[in-house]
Every structure is written in C-alpha cells, then in structure tokens.
Amino acid sequence: MTPTHPRLRVSPDRRSLVREDGTPFVYLADTAWELFHRLDRDEAVAYLDLRARQRFTVIQAVALAELDGLSEPNRYGRLPLIDRDPARPALSPRSRGGGADDYDYWDHVDFVIAEANRRGLYVGLLPTWGRWVGGRPTDEPVFTVENAVVYGEFLGRRYRDRGIVWILGGDRPADGLEEVWRAMARGIARGVTGEEAYEAVIATFHPRGGGTSSTHFHGDPWLHFNMQQTGHGPAEAVRGWDRIAADYALAPPKPVVDGEPLYEDHPIGFRAASEHGFSTEHHVRQRAYWHLFAGACGFAYGNHAVWQMYAPGRRPVNGPLLYWYEAIHRPGAAQMQHVRALIESRPMTARVPDPGLVVDPLDGPHRIQACRGADYAFVYTGTGRAFTVNLGTIRGDRLRAWWYNPRNGAATEIGEFANRGQRSFTPQYQGLGSDWVLVLDDVASDYPPPGSGAR
Image 1 (cartoon, one colour):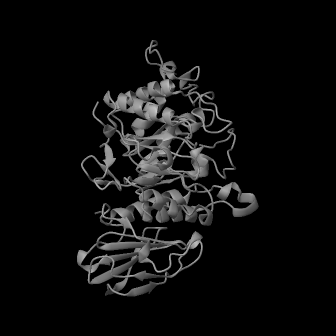
Image 2 (tube, one colour; image 1 turned 90 degrees about the horizontal axis):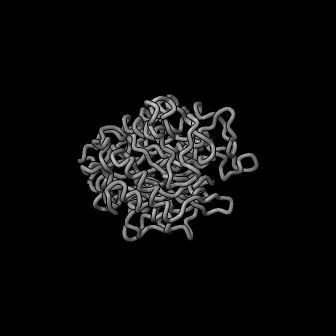
C-alpha cells in the first residue's frame, strides 16, 4: 500500500516538524479523544469535513478510549479487545461474506483514519488512554510490559502506511510505568518497520495536566518531540509561555507542542460556577498565540463537548454546555486557521522566541509574547494592551508594520519607520477579546500582508 501522507520528521535544527521532503509542517490539531468510540461513520465524516475546511492538520483521537472504552461498545456494538486483553484485539473472522456482522471495532478505526487522511488530516493516534496503563488510584490497568509490545506491534503493522502521529500516554503521570510506555513505543516501531527503527515513525507522549513528556522521556530515542499539557487553569496560574520556554531550552533540543491547553467552553480551573466561569474563543486564541510565539511548533485546540462527543443520553463530564454536533461550530475552532495562516506567511523554520523584543511583557491575561525570524517579528498582546518594542533586532534599515486580527485574519498596514531605538504601539481596542498581533517586516523583503502568501 502506498503511504497516504508524506511522513513527518524533525527538522535539522530540531525545533520544528517537517514533511519528508523538508517542507515545514504546522501541527494544528483538534482534540477528538472519543472519535472512534462514540461516532458512527456518517458523523465522523461530517466532523472531519468541517475540520478539514477549517484548515486543521491533525486530529487527536484515542484507540482505547477513556470513557469506558473497554466495556462500552462503539456505535456498532463492538469492543476493541477480547477479555480486556491488549494482546488480543477483537478482530472479525471474516467468515460471513463481509456483511455488517463483520465490521469490527478496528474496521471502524481503519475507516475513520482513512477518511481523515483522505481530507489531508493526519491522525494523532493515542494507542490507549492512560487510565488503562495506570497512574491514578482509580485507574484499571490492563497493560504490562509484555502485552504493551504485542499491542504496539499490532497497531504499527495495521497503520504503517497511514498518516499517523503516534501519541503515547493519555493524561496520566508516568512514574513507575515508564517501561510499559517504552515497550509500547518499541512495539509500534517494530510493527511499522520490522525492527526498532524509531526514525521511521514520529512519536510523542501526552502527559498529565500541567506536565510535559520531557519529565520522563526527553532522552528516549522514540520521543521525537515533546508534548505539554498546559491545562485548563487561568492564565496567571498556568503561565503556559514559561512551560513551553522550559522545554524549548532543554538539551538536546527537541520540538515542543502544546497538546492540551484550555479548551473552549471549559470550566476554567474546573471551577466555573464558583470562581472563573467558562472559557471562550478569546481564551483559546490567547493560548495559541502565546504558546506558539514562546517556542512551540504546534498547538491543539479543543472544545469541552467535542473531546467527549457529548450527546443526548450520555453522561456529561465536567458540565459541557452543548452537544458535540453543535459545539463543532463554536467560533474558536474556525479562528485557529488564522494563526496557521500567519505563521505560514513568513519563513517558518527561521522563527525563534524572543521575549526581549518587548520592554515589559506583562503577565497573566495581559501577557505580551514575541517571536521573530531573520527579517520579521510577531508581537501578540493578549488583551490589546499597549507595548514598547526594542528595534534593531531583526534585519533591515526600515520596517513595515501591520496589525493582524486573530479573530478574522485581516491585516492592516500601519506605516514604515527606521529600524532603531524603541517604538510604542497601541491597538485600536483593548480588553477581553481585543487581542492583536503586531507584525514587523524588513521593507526590503517585500512580504505580502500577514496571513497571505505562505512562504
């Protein structure tokens, strides 16, 4: 079978992800943990169609789902394992002529992955949620080192020619369980290549809330990039830009992705009614721009109803506000394409975080975060606060400045000036929901308006 997608690999400078031909890749994911478990074929296709139109590049989903995925059948009445044994995937014997009775759980996973790839989407595939490996007292572990290898080989063989980003873990601490996860990674590599050829796959680890894959696995050869779960708390408590920067500073360098920030429509800090309220599209945009400008090469959007595919008759988890088929149309999802467009409109592989561009970067929801290339800079103000930039850092005698609107992707040119000294900038609006990106370009580079003309 011909691979459906170019394989992804780490860039030569080990700061980003690229396709196998070397072209840059923006990891822009939607979080659909229960996709395989709770949606039927038609629902999955409708969901994937929308996310492809919104220019996501990755769909994060879990093979052995968190919400009773080993005992609650999928929409076709099928379970993934025989007797909850990861070494015994529940596969149809194919003895009845290919009818509906032959459509097993893994056939459905096959279908959804193929349909995602057909639409240009990679699947960020979690082999299992952490609940089934352990890490919390209430977990129900079914994995051992021995069966983790077998299960990993099964998945690696089955999906070796699909567009997959392998994501081990699943919202659990890895303390004392490192060898189980390493065994699973080993099995996946063997299934894909026939040996432990980790360079032939691309893999990371989804950690517990507030955690990072680097804590346990930064030096492991199977971990190609780090993943943070900056989590669902308020900005002043999370300070996700510092967490991203900490992974960015590690040696040897590895790319870092925020694989689970604050979801849209989520109770902030899990205390919506008593304290913080629910998150909005503005909170989601803040995390995306803050964290990408702090050094992340990727970001995962999420909606609180969509990750759990909440629908009538299902037990809600932490108070979703809508059903999943309503929540997929929330504005934050559609606005994620604008951060991708901005990043792609300037040379991506040259972009580095540079907090020193801003005289006073502030903190909490007002945070101002900056990054730059050789001849351009991006400065994001989380609530439209005015700020002062130290000029002379990027190339060029004269700079052209733009305001870029994260809500709609519109760019407005605001003038040219000499590239020296300091200069202050004040957005047109301020307050919650009035975030902006200042774009500075070397005039000689003659870039198109930000968000257009991908470079």
